[in-house]
Image (tube, rainbow, N blue to C red):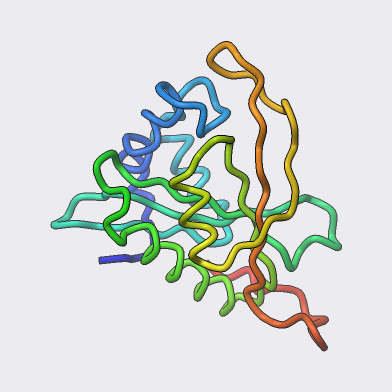
Length: 171
């Protein structure tokens, strides 16, 4: 089941995310966020949804501002994380498709995602969902003893012709 995240999901989301921080270069954070910090992030996201399996949060996806300047307000940055063992099970696709619908409803036109290279699983998911290459930041982050590149991809959520109203800031 996919549903909107609640503040009470913060600890579970933090637990799903922590191994990405400590054991991989997928996240550029170096310390896993606390449940309180995750609750703050959930509250300030454009949208945050969770994949729930038998009452257990098994993954999440969210969107937050792409950049702070006003002209970027129709765009957002997306991220998705699944607990280990859940890759290639359809959960990521289901989370992202639900997230995109929420974002379209709120009036967002473009979604961006960044992924540390190499990351074949993430690149494949984003490609399958219609993201297109936008560019690569070379040697932009230092983690686990090496400089890392980040590939950026983008997806049109809806047409921008005639779009002049800012996105809705609904919960």
